[in-house]
Length: 272
Ligand SMILES: NC(=O)C1=CN([C@@H]2O[C@H](COP(=O)(O)OP(=O)(O)OC[C@H]3O[C@@H](n4cnc5c(N)ncnc54)[C@H](OP(=O)(O)O)[C@@H]3O)[C@@H](O)[C@H]2O)C=CC1
Ligand SMILES: O=C(O)[C@@H]1CCC=N1
Image 1 (spheres, rainbow, N blue to C red):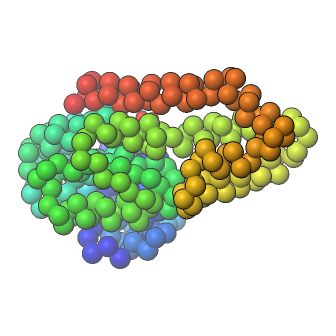
Image 2 (cartoon, rainbow, N blue to C red):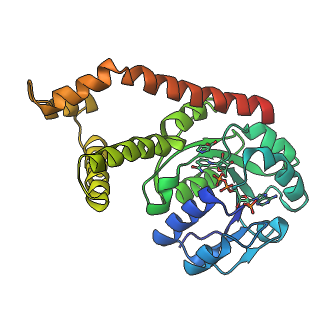
Image 3 (spheres, helix red, strand yellow):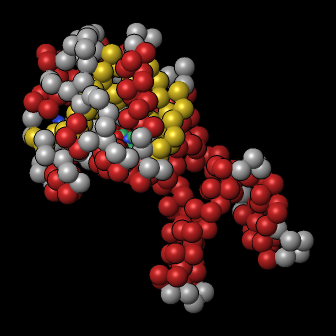
């Protein structure tokens, strides 16, 4: 139960991940609605109990307390201008769009509604999300809490008080599930080339990823020390880790994250 109603504008990957996480965490499916131009995503949403699904953005947004903008960044302006006549000071608008500045969203909405920007990630779908949140200074404590309630229901949250830090959140969390998926794809492929069947390769790799992630998240030992503890002198891990080091893994990770950050800034300049 949330005590407020939430409308998702655009029922794509990110919206469905958050909605799935909300329902699993106990939010009443009747308090959640969604709009989308095509029917495609509606079957999945109906399966988890949503009934208020529409093609009209205005119809789902106008009577909701919280409106989540879940469309692609290049459509945020168009959607804000469409919703502007029906949204007022009593609405909280939460944007998940990469790059698009909170002030621009506020202006496109007619400078009435309160705006929170967040950068979530798709593990929200299973309650494993990691979200950065930024509120414009005019956002009330109640609305900050509502935005946090939504995102906390699907994972962990961190507020940032400088909006530009959302570029860094994008590089380390929003986009980052894809880095781990890419790493896992390579590991699973190689394990099969080494002779393991596909199911074993996938399960062993995924469980190792979960276990390692939990050790960093739940313990008080730094990742570097945890890595050292796996590396026996002249043992197997040392060889593997040496291959990563000589191959320039640190620099590559740094370059990938810098490129991600730069693209987020660039989208902000293009779209805000
Ligand atoms: N995917 C991710 O991991 C993350 C995404 N984000 C942000 O989430 C937002 C959505 O991304 P993502 O979910 O990946 O994209 P998707 O393309 O999966 O979802 C966008 C959805 O919006 C719908 N849509 C298109 N036009 C409109 C419109 N005028 N009104 C309402 N809905 C519309 C699309 O429908 P149709 O397909 O029928 O056109 C689609 O279902 C982006 O702004 C992105 O920056 C943030 C963090 C992580
Ligand atoms: O790739 C993107 O632009 C979006 C934002 C963060 C994750 N996916």
